[in-house]
Length: 253
Image (cartoon, rainbow, N blue to C red; front, side, top):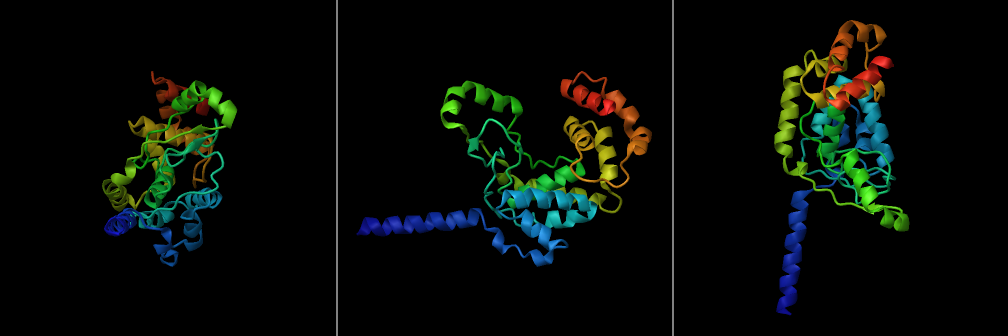
């Protein structure tokens, strides 16, 4: 009987500890946001609602950033994605040999908001896990192909760290917005990324121009030719294979 009592106490301890580690999004009052309906969908568990809401939020532009930052106020807010189909992200446990790769641990709401904010701004605050690459996925698929033929999937378990570093990452994002909110726009952000020395920001901006994820007011061929074409031509002379490839595609479009 004494042992049973200790087990119950230990179980309660673990339960309390888990509650301190994460909290459900029901605690987020979306009525306090400028775009409550979109935010409600964005923080839901349903993947289809999440990515559609994210696209809609990004199309709003810079005025949505305060809402995204407000979602970061509780770094422990957590909502496990459901019905993710073939999405592969750090919280996934299965890889079907193909699918949409998102290298953000978007079960954590603050990281989900960071994913949207980094897409919008072409900034890298540190929300991405950097644990999923196409090369590694293809190697996994190749090395375990026999099992894949049998089951139709691969079991995966990605090492996730960013939720442990969120306080620092969130502070960086909020500080950036504090210093830039008066004159920043998605268009100026696109140009800043291209003229930066950060290859990842450059590639993000190029992907936005090649495969429009959201509308950027003022972005058109005339602006491209006047503001950044010369820089893209310069970047195309790089020895970095991926950057050379992507700038080449962009110049041919």
